[in-house]
Amino acid sequence: MTALTPEQLIAFRRDLHRHPELSHQESRTAAKVAEALRAAGLTPATGIAGHGVVATLEGDHPGPTLLFRADMDALPITEESRHGYESCNPGVMHACGHDVHTTVGVGVASLLASRRADLHGRIKFVFQPAEEAAPPPGQVIGAELMVREGVLESPAVDAAFALHVMPLLEAGKIGCTGGAVWAGSDIFDIHLTGSMAHGAYPHEGIDPIVAAAAVIQALQSLVARETDAREAAVVSVCRITAGTAYNIIPDRAHLQGTIRTLSTAVRERLLARFNELVKSVASAYGCTAEIALVQGAHVTTNNPTLERLFAERIGGLATVPFKPQMGAEDFSAFARRVPAAFLFLGVRNEERGIVHMIHTPRFDVEESVIPTAVQSMSEALLATARDWATIAPQLS
Image (cartoon, rainbow, N blue to C red; front, side, top):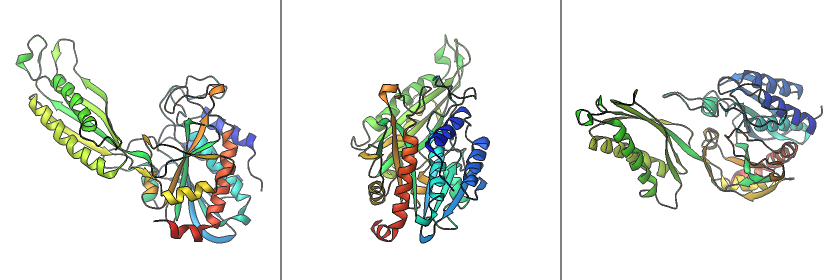
């Protein structure tokens, strides 16, 4: 059995890029992944947490169970680049590099399947759906749902690993944060209720738009004046809807946005003050406020020791310090249950104009890093599994 060649890896990534699928719709992607895993001699389980795919590779030697995760879903963005493998699905694009993550996962599975004789323990390959989606109130999706469906069990996972493309890093580099990696994410809905009036007679009503403007302004003080400047936090109102005509003061205004934090303590304090501030400001303007908060991903935090020891075993890519990001990642569902290391894969190439950030319509990657990442992650997983007896006691 032979591993996928660099040319095959690039072709696989381009196929996924041409056919992106939104969260909860990753059926074709999952089928391609399962097909590739079977070709590598693995027996994938499908339909996990929706369209998730899981396959376990058993090595020839006793050892730990390590998990390697790749996400598969795309974003509702219209691609603007014309590089010959642009999206064929209008309004849908792999603008966050999940096509690369999936390709690296398939490549590592293929390579390690050809090297079972060198593998201690086993590697559980997890291809996850719905990383980009926000969970409906009271529901879980994506990584959290995979955990609840038993992905960390049978056999029990000892440590989890993942990587994410990063256009802020030059191609050929791996970024390590040494702790927090991605922010925790909370989604808020605020409904402000006043009373309707003619725009020429505002004193006859209670204007929720004015109250909304005051709430937006007041919320900025939660970070600017109530959060330690040495702590990271973001409160962003990203959508406001109100009104039906130019001369009617509406009776309701609706605000939506997100809260991002890099520590649980900061998050809890912000949420408590968020509710208090919104209700008091709304009341000061004569309105009532209804607030709904939905927790998204928890803070993704690496085990610093595991991250360092894993990075030391990476070859072919230069490891460099990298700052935590205020985006969110539901890999936290794994990282808060088992020791984990989440790394950033540099994909920037200024000479070729590959500089655009994730979640933008011109995002792309330097594809030459894909075979190198496959080789490097494979070697690091092999070495970590081999040395697990000495690594495990060092993890707190």
